[in-house]
Length: 72
Image 1 (cartoon, rainbow, N blue to C red):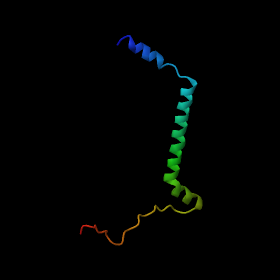
Image 2 (cartoon, one colour):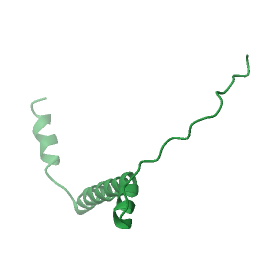
Image 3 (cartoon, rainbow, N blue to C red):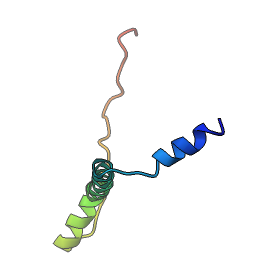
Image 4 (cartoon, rainbow, N blue to C red):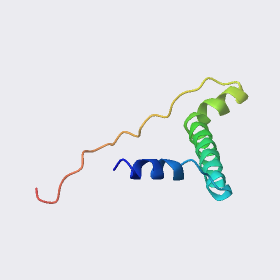
């Protein structure tokens, strides 16, 4: 075990261009995806800001009658 650890550690010190490219792509996808999710979450506020209106969050639609199950 004492001999295997330095060999494994030595192999982890090397990153070839393909691995570096993969890491850059993962970081870029994470950042772009995160920005996209933030825009989706705050789109109503952003739109209201540029229109000069006050943001009112959408209200869930209320059901008129409660649903009945088939067994009753």
